[in-house]
Image (cartoon, rainbow, N blue to C red; front, top):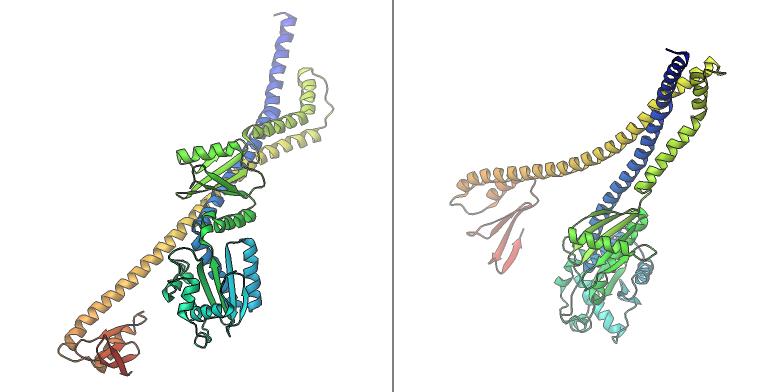
Length: 477
């Protein structure tokens, strides 16, 4: 072999060794930097999408409680007047709050307020009725309730039911106000069957009572639902909106400052047609949720980075790393390929090697730790939800078991007690036997009615009555 061929072979061997060294010290770490940065930004985007779904679920739960404007008004006023009761609020504070709500919901309701003596302190409803007639109305309603606390002025103030029905509607009955404070079936008092007069809500405290007149013609505007969504959006710092499909063309309302873009409208149409709850755009994440046949809830969150931006930043980070490695590349080229003497001391070489020995594992650990954190967070949330459901089911099972135990105990006791009481008239001794057994059980109250005597057994003793059960008169207890 000629000298020239030997030199080429030696140069090729040195070049191959240099390329392998650069691949290990620059190429692989650069790829690791690219992967780390790309995965870091991707996990951040995945967390943003996950948080969007969580916030969407919370907003949906909140919105479903307020899709009915009537239910919203009942809950809104009931909860606030309970706060007034707990804080022993004065009439001035209550009137000021009602006026602030009129500004928040313009022209949707009016109100009147009377103190415990029947004196009118406020009236925003413009009508042809006089103050004396309104006092008669207050006198009637303060005997109907609902009473958030015991009041002592309802018996002192009297009112004409005919005047009250003329002012409020012919269906002015005490039963019409029972739904104002029932969270299971909230409903306003519909006192006018013709629907001309406003709906009524009344709340009575020790300092006085308020009568609120609500315009049912504005229910289709869903102002209560929009108010709740707006509060939630301000708290979470994201844009929520509603789509009303009750008309031919869907109407969109949202909490953002700008108009809904055509791209969003196209996505809403796709979600409606394909029953999708989530959609990704290059610049936004979109959530879409069914509320009622006419209403849809949507949320839009701007992405931190698009997919192309993630790859661009990861590539830029890898290029910066390679630029920092240029001195090493030139140094190894000079010493390994060109066989020129190096000027780096053994101390610097060892420091550089230790830097790589520690830096590369740290990059790998960064990827693993972020992935582990995200996975652990999702796992803990799923476990918390599962444990909550299991706790409720366990409570339900224990309660059902306790009720069954009570039922079995009563069945066994009354089977024996029936034999002892056969042919006897219900008396104090028989009632005491029942009371002695039931006192051991979690039973609030009970009654024992005998068809052959005029005695009614109860938890605290027994009642002797005269007359019939249809016309009962108590003689002693």
